[in-house]
Amino acid sequence: MPAEQVEQAPPAGAPDRLVAGPPTRPRSAGWSLLGSELRVLFGRRRTWAMLAALALVPVLVAVAVRIEDPGRDGPPFLGSITSNGLFVSLTAMTVSIPLFLPLTVGVVAGDTIAGEASLGTLRYLLVAPAGRLRLLAVKMAGAAAFCLAAATTIALTGALVGAALFPVGPVTLLSGDTVGLGGYAVRLGLLVLYVALSLLGLSAVGLFISTLTTVPVGAMAATVVLAGAAQVLGQLPQLEVIHPWLFSAHWLGFADLLRSPLDLGSLGENALLQLAYLAVFGSLAYGRFTTKDVLS
Image (cartoon, rainbow, N blue to C red; front, side, top):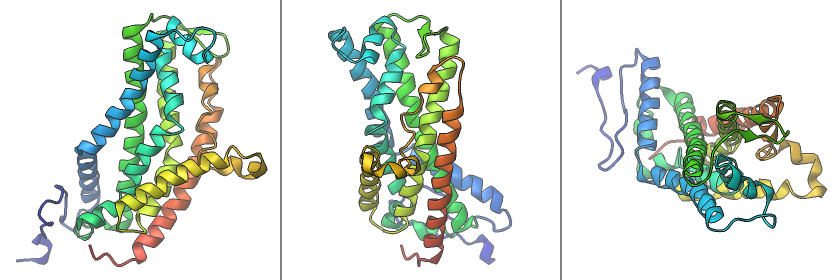
């Protein structure tokens, strides 16, 4: 039998993935590998459990405000919810960015390579003609897809539960201008994109850490700890010089998206910072991954 027709079966119990393919069609194999990665990622109960936990954040915020109106004693953004339920999305996103989103993204990013090594499927994935660089790109794309899904889950759940429990109407922006539902939907979409972009740097760091170990729990924990450490460093005035370079520097900088006229400057700055982290830690991950012996 010709060598290009031979397939190696993965170990029993391993997830269903592309493990081999014709070497003459690397582009097709790369897209198949990406599709397989997304199917495995969003086919896991753990992924849906994390998305469900994120969806619970706006539900809890809305129910808490519905039960007891914060009035003038509470934060201003909580009081805004009682007059317009669409503010639930914004409030839930603000609450989730410092802790819940980095926690879930750290789990996904830390599991990218180390999880495959732990399952014993990494060497079978490398049998495919995609190569190590393309495998890393696919893993990063999967982590980015989860970032987008997580931010979308919070925004949509917040809008739906807010509309169910509170009045809905034109939204007063931070600049004092009022926009209709269509204008707010555009800004909410940009907010989702902003938050998803904000987590790319952390995802790249997690990908690199995942190439350093075969223990996924260790990679997950290290990524989550670094997310918390970056936010702590960002609060220390003595380290003000490094604040603009932390991947968490612009996590809460989406206020310009809620003003009129719409200013995309903060979105561009955040994207440049996250892409810089993606380039640096993606290169480190590639350097590590291409020089290590894959035995599992």
